[in-house]
Length: 201
Image (cartoon, rainbow, N blue to C red; front, side, top):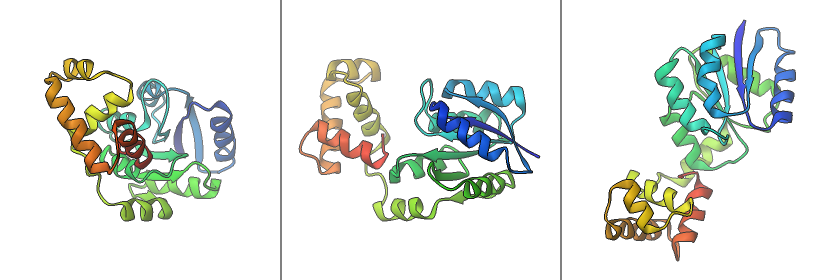
């Protein structure tokens, strides 16, 4: 029996997935949580073999949780579910240690198959999402540009970003300018929208 943890902040979606997976003879949903910061404790408590994580959740996002589980519970395979076919999400999920990546609207038999594959130590990547990620190319932003642009997306002023990242205001402006150029955007807000749309933030 494969013990599965479901993490999704949409209660109805989570409940529907749990009910459908419960019909599979070799899968048992042992925990359901609605926040990313509840996942690690639930995995430790239940001994879940596979964690099925939504990318965007309160507390901690699925990408952050995947990296946390890789360190705290390496035996627990991670399968990411996403409503957003953003190419950058796939690359970031794999970098965080996820072994599966699937659209949230996939048929339940595909999800069940992906859980089994991840549990066996293999990978399961949605082919359309993989193709989109390959076609989009690499994220052109450096780690620091991403960090600065993410802070700007949260509405922080240049001075606040500089203070929180221990940079000068001029350096923050340079990173923002570079991010604007690399995304082909006209201004900071446009760069943020482009980066978010690609899943780079």
